[in-house]
Image (cartoon, rainbow, N blue to C red; front, top):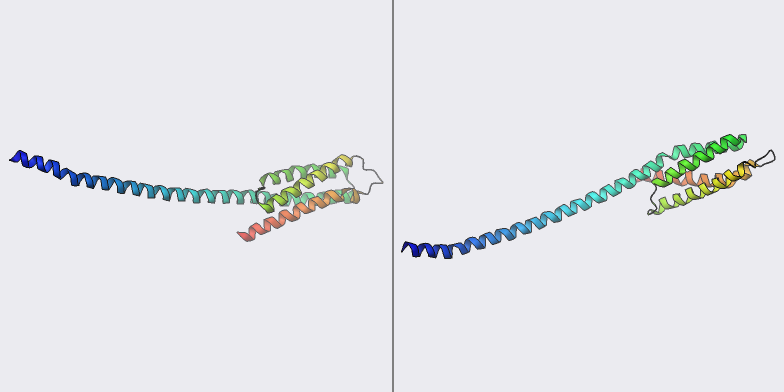
Amino acid sequence: MVWGWLNWVNGIGSIPLAVLGFGLAIWQAYEARRAANRAETAADAAKRAAEESRGQFRLLSAASLLPQLNRLEETIDQAVDKQSLELLLHAVSSWRWQAGMCRGYLDPAREEEAAVMVNIQKSMLALSQLKQSILDFGDSTDWAKETKRARKAIGDVTGELGALAAYQSVKE
């Protein structure tokens, strides 16, 4: 009698426990899926924040070169006024190096930064051509006329980079 009753409890009693265990397993799988979705959402948000911070850092790094670029623009103007070949050569070389660094910080995927990159490239091309002709400058050379294209290209860069930096500071 006892054996019969134990067999019945063992056979029938295990069914509710199995159903309860199966339900618990389904609930845990559902909660794990929800936790995974929350983690994925948080990871995406962190990735977007990191990309935005990286973009801001790059632009701020480029903008931090603006004072040096402005100073080099002034130095080139002084070299033209003084007709100093040595000062002009030094400023041209420094501009090309500093502007190249600045260009490396900019993002070509952003339209306004791409425009600055194009102007930097134009200035570097104009200065390369100027550097080739500098050694031919003589007493009769019109320095203002011979350097006009390069100085305009440099002014375009500093103007656009300044506007971009100002826009970024207002945006923040």
